[in-house]
Every structure is written in C-alpha cells, then in structure tokens.
Image 1 (cartoon, rainbow, N blue to C red):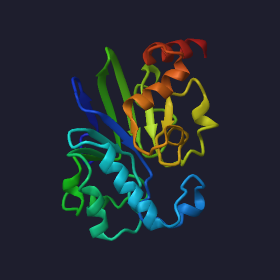
Image 2: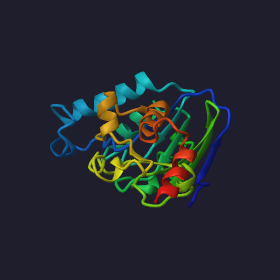
Image 3: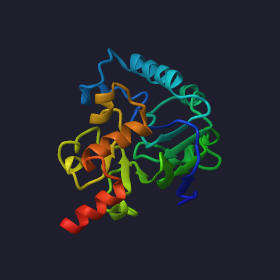
Length: 218
C-alpha cells in the first residue's frame, strides 16, 4: 500500500457515510443499469453532485469505495470533489486512475486518505466495529471470523441475492446500484444503514458473537 491501510476512529461525533460506483460521466451506465432513471448523463451527473451537497456535511467522514469518475474532464472532476468533506477516504476502483489520487495527482488534495484496501476500526454505541473496505468483494478478509464486515462496491448489486445473501457472510455492496442503496433511496449510505443491514443477518447479535457462533456450527 502506498498509504497506511488502517484507520481507527474511537470517539468520532461526525456522521460516517459510504458510497461507491457513481460512474460520474459514464453514459453507458444508464443502459446497463435499469435502476438509474435519468434521461441522460447530464441529468445523472447533476443528481450526483446535488445529493452529495445536500447530504454530506463538511465535518462528516465519507468513504468512496471506487469508480467515482468515467472519462471526465478535469474541471468537472474538481467541480464534484469540492463538495466532498475534508475527511474523504478514497478506495481505488478498477475504473479509477490511481495517478490522479496519489502524490502529485490532480485530485490528491481532495482526499484525506487513499488506499487499495483499508481496515476501519471504531467504537459505536458501545460495540467494537471492524470493517474491511474494498472496491471488490473479498472471500476472506482480515478478522472475518471475529465479526469484521467487508464493505465493498464494484458488483452493482449482482451478488446481493447470491453470495452476499448468505447469513454467514458479513459482506455488503454499498454501490449506487446495490440493493441497500435502492432500499434506502439514496447512493450515500450511512454507517447506521450498513450496520442495520448486517444486524438483520445476525438477528441482533454483536458481530463478533455471531461470527464465533457460525464458525462453531460449521
């Protein structure tokens, strides 16, 4: 990793958000995904910018899990990025040009951290939460059997009813076209949205307890 791939958030008053696979500027994405009801890419781009402006506050923490832009002019990229909070963490996706985000890149200063994969540790309502953040879904990830959650994008909801539906897999797609985004009616998902979806799998049990239980039953 070119940057430290771990973030610890002990006592954070800020809201925490996740998003992935915006594909700003990608005209063909409208043909591939019936969940994007825009008449053209200009309308979609405007929706993306306005939603970020209206949802995320400057003091918030935002994780972008990849594929933010698609063949977009530099001025348009900066036009969207200026609305990102100072603590925006970038996970590189397959359609992201790494050189734009790493040292010397035109978008570097818009992002607090940049990595290919990142572990997130935080304490939330008395529970220790562990996550591995990645663009692609992972089969085995750090602390998986200790209750860690794999939060990913890339799949556009295509594995939500198969691999991700397994109650033993604490893995979730937070992309624009994923099931959770469609359920919530927005591509910017809160930490509560993600944890709520995972707790439906664990029947309300703490994630570490659930993982230990499922491992014992295997």
